[in-house]
Image (tube, rainbow, N blue to C red):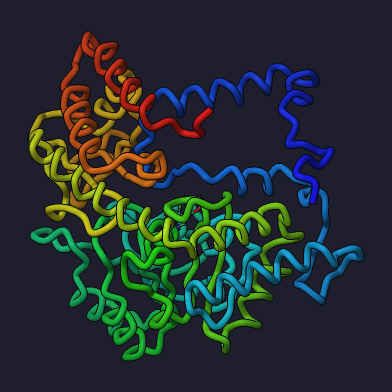
Length: 421
Ligand SMILES: *Cc1c(COP(=O)(O)O)cnc(C)c1O
């Protein structure tokens, strides 16, 4: 097989045709090479996945599923999607897999579509306690079209209150209960959710968008044996292309497939579906499993390092790839912390903490994640360098220390470059 097909991905062709956009790509590469990416939902996907994304598969219309398409000419893309489905079922021990959701939010819309009707009661984690927009936010379809009952974390442990979940489920008899979150650093007790769902006859949906990459690497327990349906993104810890995926029990396969297409989406993004297949192959390797374990070790080291800098990890630490950090003890809010770190080329996000006295636009905390820096090859020693850089940056009220901190950051990233030259 030729390793240089005519279509590229040809950066020189882009640079000639559209230098303005080519410059954005180059500047973004320099940005990620020169700074620390601690956004918990971001990562660096592999060159093989990028090559698939930048390929002619982007051109193909393939509405439907392999062997049952609404368009001709799908023989080749059928092979890619079938390989991806088989890899997903094998990697996660799932009875059925759908690789077509365009994103995590699209996957969630399809799950609602498969199991509920507008007006039904659905239980999910409250947003201020770490839930996602698609778990009932008033500005999202979920909050507009469904009767959402929210559960949260206990104020003392800052962990999910399973007694509250059970009591609310018995009281409200939801059609579906969602577990999974976007800013929850702890493991979720899937067996507890299963027994609550069985008790009230609810569908158990796990939104594993954040942590599925750790499950793929066998670094944390899997929700697949417990859940009716597991939705997730492929671009967070899992390190694949931007997109979504759904796993489910065989009995729900037809409902899920129909909900993804034609209920919620049109044609699949076949370049992304093929990219998911590539990422699934990568995720089945020993190297990936070592990465997944290191992501958690790094998050725990970073949380401990930040605690030593006077910043409190919510719930006392983390079992996963992210830590939520309460900055009230040092008198800095999340918005200022985010801006000050940004000035020092440390990219992270402000985040509400449970029972936050500040409005969400200000927030009392930050969220940090280790997938990207772990992909770059950093380990526990680098996490203490990062923790002290953050400790200095968040207290840098007038920005006078930012250049010096940024220089230390760039020294670190030059030793662990993203997309090495
Ligand atoms: C990121 C995330 C999503 C949405 O994924 P998108 O690809 O951004 O649409 C859904 N649920 C949870 C819990 C997430 O963290």
